[in-house]
Image (cartoon, rainbow, N blue to C red):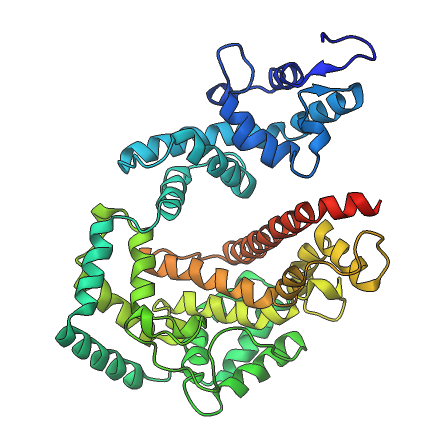
Length: 439
């Protein structure tokens, strides 16, 4: 049926008409200027229009209100779609450079491009490495040869015994550099103002290593809890750092891990992460990578560069303030308030709080797993922050200025929140038939 006043329209025509109004998306477009079939399947339907949650917008014929809504959704997302097209070009180029042939390039890279556009906006100078890193992570361990060599190296009995002994030796002989009470005062000065001067004083100190190494000693967990309360005014919840009162020596092999705690991850798992991050051309022999990771693991918080361990300590004292289900709070340090408000005002968090209060007609309780993850937001934030900092440690790069650290912490909070937003969306889509029946 052709378009006309009050008439239904072919969905494909509505999509094509709206798509042609978006500039700079040629790599996602067909010869007629409309979106490619895979663009619709991999980007528009699942990520922009979200037909799983709005099935009436996925019908072959759209009535005028539905056609208007589809057009509005596409045009409202036009900036991100332009960025998606730009990221796809980088992904395709890096895929060739990495000699990746698995999977259809559009099936794999279209959703990844949209994800990168959501996280970073338009590509910048760092785009090639971000695209390469994303592809390496998506396709699994970078360079199966490196992973196979690592597995063989850690499976041989004699090297395993020698490496375990060497790890224990380094673990127990690392000097304790600083008093944690002094370190807590420096951390408090940063979160209460985040000036360049306060950050520089903290960055020049071994505060991060001090807290990280203190966790291995009797009373170390209590010292960290005191610092958290001194800085944020809150008790320290379980932050997923270690299983007991003292950090255990991490195992060499991943199969020997007894939990998922950050500071007790195996050497094997950490080196696998290194192999994912580094291009094959930049990788040292496996024995060298393992030796580097032994030194890194023996340092405070498992981060060898002092500024990175200090940045993680800053994340630790801020993390308990990230309590999105409690809503915005005025009794926290300024930067902690800002981070918590960033999550607390998200629509899915507001929905979860309304549901908990019994003031939403949709469902009696939101999804239990989502609630648990919101309650454990601090733990998930720290896990993501540690992984990011470990990547800096591997590459030898690190954020330097106070503004860089603010951006890093804000970005990790946002990416953690985006992950949870996606899970909430899936939970709502799964319960949609029941919700529609109830209405």
